[in-house]
Image (tube, rainbow, N blue to C red; front, side):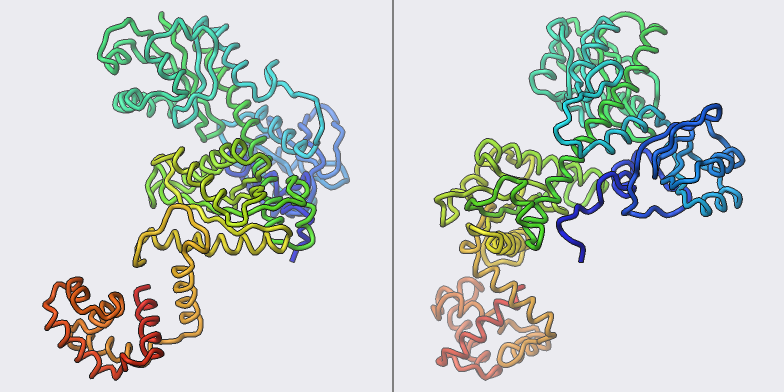
Length: 557
């Protein structure tokens, strides 16, 4: 087992870079990366100059095309360790290239089509600098502070002489420029709600605007009459000009300008250049967010699991020496449905849910730490003077009330903890409760459970499920009176198991039990006598009754 003091990948590691950029920008063409291998820096190859190579560098083969040029580049690398060589995809691999790469221990990577070398270089340098805590230097992209999308929007608006919004793939407004007061009613609704109203997006989808926008590198013009048709009022709407923002084949979002007049060549060029700049800022923002999200997840996971690194992790989360409790939350549905959508879309939904929970707790429980581990959002909440956990339950119920039907979820609350061992127990308790809440939501419980619960709220449900797990692990089967009734009902298509269960559920009240099965009390009494005769159960014996009741409860699951 690895030392929990260490992060999953070391600082500046090859594996961390592939973990962050592999899906969007980079693909492995040849070789296998050592996950623990550090990366010392980024070098842009120049055939007419001899750059300074740090050890374990990423070498960007800008302008290197074909297998012959690639082999020559690899063979000409300095006599020191080099992590990888990156060339434009598709990578032309030959025996000569493979042999040269294997001899030098170099991994050959391909840069995705459509992605720019500027994007890759900027993102690599961002990731390599991610642990420089306390660095007050602010990078700039295109002369604008990195990640300042509002400054980017204002710059684009100045060039186009029109108000601008920058939106993500879900038509959420990420940033907007000044002069929005010049726009029409549709733009006002969008800015106020920070999201394009659904009726607009539906209309644009029907007209094929988004399909064209995300398939083309050129701007798309949306006539003002399309905007007017949505509001059903001709209020002099301004036409829209939009362009997709992408990194390689991945669409990141779009830029929308409210401007009348023809789409001139100059405006087209401006929008294309703006889209590349916005892509770079969005990638930088995402890289920064991913770094913070991963760091929180690593620290939280270490603190929850205990072990040698738990104390340090808890200290870095500023939760040492406090009474805390662990909460575990899972989305029960997503915008794409319980089973639909890509893995990437489901992950994005879970990240939004985790971010929403973190924002809520930062206001209601200052000092809380929240992170997503797998499909579950975990939180460690400071809970002074709350031995029952009721305060935490109310906080979680308030959160679910706020997110409403947009993010249906269940949340388990662990018991208070004052030390590392207590935190581990609190997490274990929360996981047991969460399982009961999730499986009850899918059916199989005798009564509905709450959206938020502690172990004391669902102890019977948890106990029944864990007993059933024990039976499955040991390979146990139902025995005694209940097994004989199951066998009889299976052969005769009878209802003796249901009869006995109803009698137990209503404490021997024949009238109520018969009503649940929709039969006459005399019919029920006859079936109960038959159940006793066939099974051999002694209903006057407390142990017999308890054993049969327990087996029937387990049978329900």
